[in-house]
Image (cartoon, rainbow, N blue to C red; front, side, top):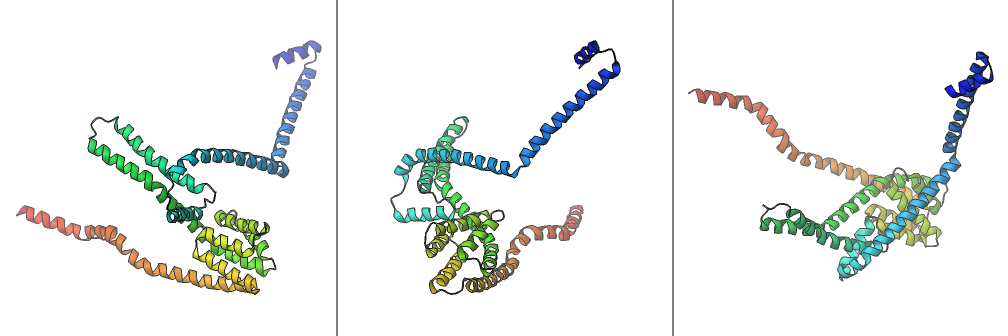
Length: 322
């Protein structure tokens, strides 16, 4: 700034001219900077640019996740070929649990068995390496820790899978009443079954994404040419829930006999509300029995200490003075 002022002073002897020129230069700089910031904000707020940026980011993330998935499946494939059980019953049970948990990929089952084999070997080896750092650990303890680690590696994936199944079914169960009410409203308003399922899936994307994905998959199967009955039965098979299975049975019977879908959904909605009311009453009736254990373990000891504690202290003092 001093160099600029000296240069302007050499051009003119008037201090006022130099002052106004510096003010104009500063104002122009601020104006250009403000216009640049405004342009950036406008670009960021532009819905078209934001949508294109989101699509490009989603495509990039999908490509990256796809490459990671391919590499993971390539790594797990040879391992699963040797550790997967030959029993078809066990394979069907694990495959069914994987579907209930949301893992519907063609290589989900082999990845599960490969992961179990890796943990079965990796956890005991890790325990052996860690125990070598402690010289005072006896051999019997090392063997016990190694056996526990091997058991955790073998049973851990099954336990985690069961928890994932419970969590996903709980999420589906929580979103099913809202989906049923929305489906009744959409069908009664004149939409077809496929359009109603699509609209309900769109409405539940934020509140219940698991159920929205399942309904969107049903709609995609219907649009791809799969029979409506088959698509609905696939939904029941993927969820593993009696509530959704009952809804699917109602819709299948309606489509088979040609009756009104709105009437069938209204009747099932009323039955489902009665079932929810009965389930809530059952939980409320069990509440008294469930409260016995925390009362006995936590409330009664504190009550006895407060009520009988002073008397016990006085008796101890009296007997100690004898």
